[in-house]
Image (cartoon, rainbow, N blue to C red; front, side, top):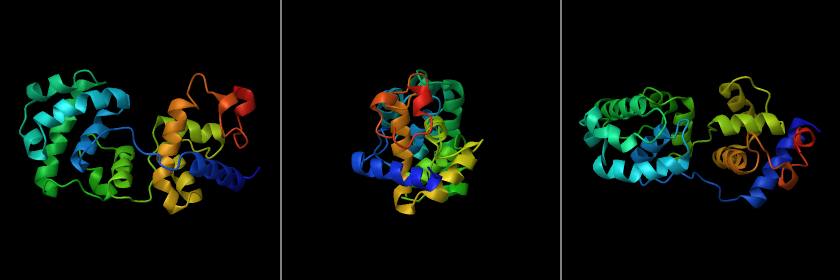
Length: 211
């Protein structure tokens, strides 16, 4: 099977079976999503969704968060992973939004990456979800699934991102990020992939060795 055939088969299955895939993070504004994505690093969306309502109710705008102290913000995020660094990142991110971007979340990926706590994956998530840009964010789920099912052999997230964007049409890229995340989260899990019930089995290059 060629890589082109594999991409076509897998994308076709996703289009038919998961046409409305989207983020599981709950948010009401670009700023709210940015806060949630920063908190979601190495943390579950479920936990982040438990934290953000109270946090954003107390600090609803970049100005409010930028003017807050570490001691004021920390109690709201202490249950997520790496709460100390994320507290600092949130305050510093909000300060830079206010000072450099007029309190608006930028759409440019390079601009997004100047914000504290925002790496390429986070920037791509914001650009894709908020601004509908044809980019694919590669997190641990996307990286693992892409390798396992045979979409990429890239050694880094950036290399996997390039492979995916090279083979996935622009109109499918935003959804593809969510397709691969959800597939990795619920079916192609790290320790016990559900190969026998996986709809992608006909195109997966590792299904026999993992089942």
